[in-house]
Length: 255
Image (cartoon, rainbow, N blue to C red):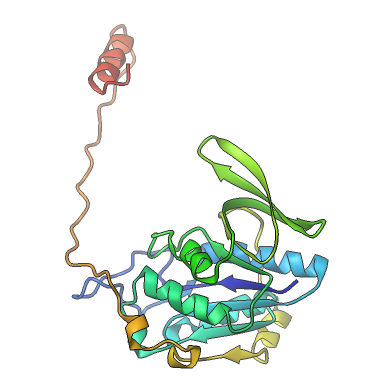
């Protein structure tokens, strides 16, 4: 089983990313890392190929600063990687990103593509399913557990009403939720081995994408600070506490 995993370098995943004057995230010259949510996807892929054989390929789109994120995935155990870097991709929206990732994934089609539900810097949550549409693949989303049995993909999905069990033929694409597993830490041996693993650096043109395919159809025109939330009301214990709480719930139309 050959598995492709979409990964992303994000700036300051545990801090507060900065926006430039164009309202885009500042990615050059800042600290960054592999998106924490992507580590679960890499781990799931590694577990599948360790059980059923095959290789894991990580695919990412980003500037040169994104290379450490790809190298971390390789150090975790992925076998090969592809990082698409092209100056024309600066400011790419979700649709352009999906188009590029789909073109990259179609170079050597995998049996399964795994992605996080959403990135921690964009939060659109639309890129993986858009890739599935471009590649004409079934998509199984919000997966909390993944396995391969009897020539079928078996997945437990999180839904608004609880969970459901899904069986799906391959090839397919899944989005994996954070907490689906316990990502491994790269060992020293893995870190050293990552330096010699195959790494492709194609441009968008080398993936067969022309200038028209890279034109973003969305842009951020303004950014406003979120309004400060009121601190609320603390109801002290006492004879009137229950009555006051009931009044507040009534005002909020909860009861």
